[in-house]
Length: 78
Image 1 (tube, rainbow, N blue to C red):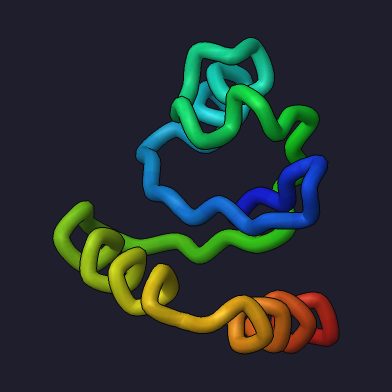
Image 2: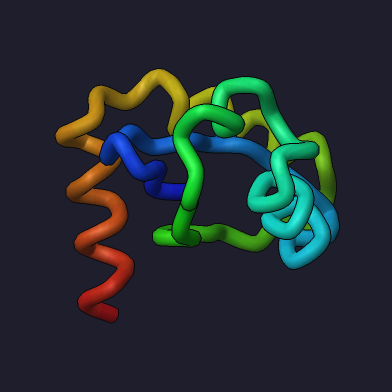
């Protein structure tokens, strides 16, 4: 997950995190982020395959913002 300049949270998947963040920061990533730069990586999870990652992405995207913030906070305390 990325935190945007407007404090919104962007959720997505990739198999190359550094490359994807670089694309977002240069304005070549998602349209959603282009007007919300800069972004900061605030949370990530690793999966063995794309199918599992996609299922988890859908779950996370369905969370309310407060629930996402709790997920982020719980991970930073580990």
